[in-house]
Length: 280
Image (tube, rainbow, N blue to C red; front, side, top):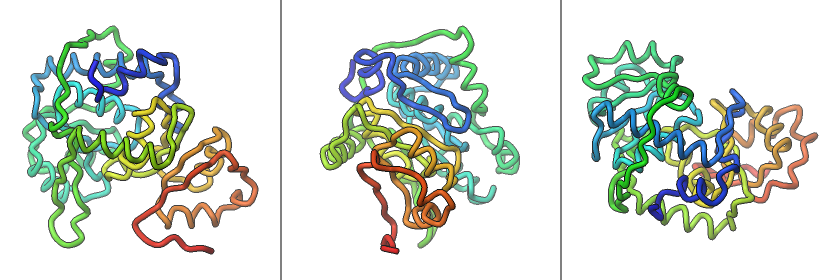
């Protein structure tokens, strides 16, 4: 077992612990289930001819499948490329052309946009098709692939505010040290939990809390899109201990009718950035 394969580690140590929960669909996956899901998906990807160094683009909103894809790509030496589904078809075409994915995954909500792209020369699969790998009696491929620390794991595209968006490569080594430093700074343990409301195509949606919590065998909840009132209620209901949001999002939460009613004494840290946080 690789020291970089955190899902496999916790599947061995705490197999029955819930690792990921979708608060939209109420799906829950234990660490053991994530491990099995990733291995089944690996078998499917091998059938499709994916090999080390290939890029896997994703045009989809938040779902537990992102975590499974993260694990599967790491175990195969693939590069996960979350794409900004808020971009126009023309802007997305440029990104797809730049990263040249071997496989492009999409949610049903984004299928219409996919159809507007310039001709895409890659394998196309929907998220429901990916999900069938777990639910069906699919093959399982564990294998003995050695996760290499200098291999790219992600490509995140910049916003392009000063020009054309640029793909930023993120390696396994970068992931590990970011996670370790964050865990030490915030004192993260397996007892912690978060709700991820940041977009999956931005580095903050992965590297501020999600991957550090997976590193420590903790729990990650997620919402498909940010809802300020629902988020506050979920933070209280699930005794969430860590939370990341942009200042604008925090301001929206402060303006909700439930803000002064919820009890968040379990919340140890709120992490924010991008601009100054208003004191009012």
